[in-house]
Length: 126
Image (tube, rainbow, N blue to C red; front, top):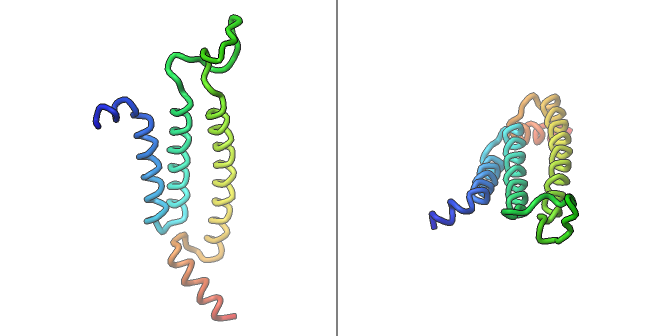
């Protein structure tokens, strides 16, 4: 068991990062901390995809010196997925930060419980 951990340490670190991010999403009440947790989770997923796409002894899929055999190169799809995921992650983070700023300007708090209670009171006043 421990020997497999040493062999697959990238995957183990990816799972640990995902777990840390997921627990932050579950247990933190602060919106900024939840956003940080989501980004940590994303990092774990990207690390996992990148480690799955890497094959020892193979090179990036750029034809050099006339070598055209598929066995000489890694699969470029995981790298493309990681790059696409990073772009999507940055976009989602930007939107979430803008929504967090709007919530803070309206309720003067980043705590979800406080925001929920204040929104209930505002709804009752209408």
